[in-house]
Image (cartoon, rainbow, N blue to C red; front, side, top):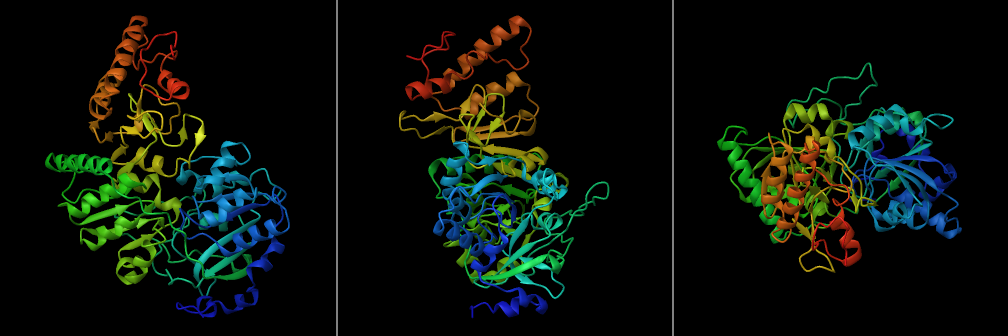
Length: 530
């Protein structure tokens, strides 16, 4: 028996108890090539014991590369599941966002076919059947979903995330349910609204971050459940990012900007609902709010990190809406469980199609804050592909928020550490080698050097503001020289709305590859890389 109740107490539809089995007994339901839908969003709320049992089976029977599956999951999940599957060559296709050294290696070596997608669009397109349109049934073959409980009517109560559970149930007739009794039940924290397909898609009537518009469970036809497995494994949540001076300085710039906008009457005193990505800068911004003078704050976001608990404890955050509790394995989740009644009363977890809905984001006037790999002098940002080719994780939901927010803010250090250059690699470049977020979607860019408010600026003015406010001092003259040279040549030809020289705009990246530094000696057209 668990400290948090028995399997029998969590499964309230008693007829389903006849389907209880051990994880290894579910192997019979799997066949190579299957399309699988998992619950989970960031390492939270994902199935554990069944994927681990299947990995054990493949490893024990030397089936690596022979038993491969297609995974459709709301976002990344624990490394002990999908990253281990990647190490065992068990993944053929993976949509739309992932985390782990082995899975990233497989993607970038061409062994795993990954598709990147805005997360709100992934959720709805999965429900529309777009990802299974070429299969015989047009559906997923099998779903694996972690829950806290099953209601008397067969409804599924998620655990620490909602992700794409409603969409999995739309297009999947066979479900394995993992009931997690190794942690307290999350029942009551969720607000589930299942969206119809067009032309009968509903309005989402959320006008405040703490509005509730649905049920506390995902409706499910119990006939779809082919197995119930007990789990006592907790989420392997992402490690807490430590703060540093650069992150603190970036956070200070953003908080000063908020103060200015309040004084000008463009923001209320308690700001607007905040969306914050993951990482040290996001933590620093929240940390600044903990120590700052803004009260009665609200959050409408994808994930809640450890520092959000600090903001609740400070008394300055009234309410938070998210898709996932992306807390650290330690101390995040233990801390949450210790004061679960307090935190749970202030948090609502929603499906991805609701938490990332452009309709809701725009109506609430969210303030979006996310970190890119780099951005260019005109305000285009790259969030996914290092060097334009190496996939890191995926675009996630940053685009959902940036394109629809009241204020769209991207923040990054001006330079990143490099083993070959003591100054580092510039994060402000003439032209981004891959663009996830266009100039049309970004209002403010921030580095530790300063904050560039781009609202209302034409491209040539925007470029000067970005170089002046955001570039590292070592790179400012290099970037300004390029801009002035590009303007002269493009204006002379009458093609200068957004001047670029395609024979030179990537010279800094080429020099990094060949000589280990982006601090080029000149912009010679001959591409002198000596």
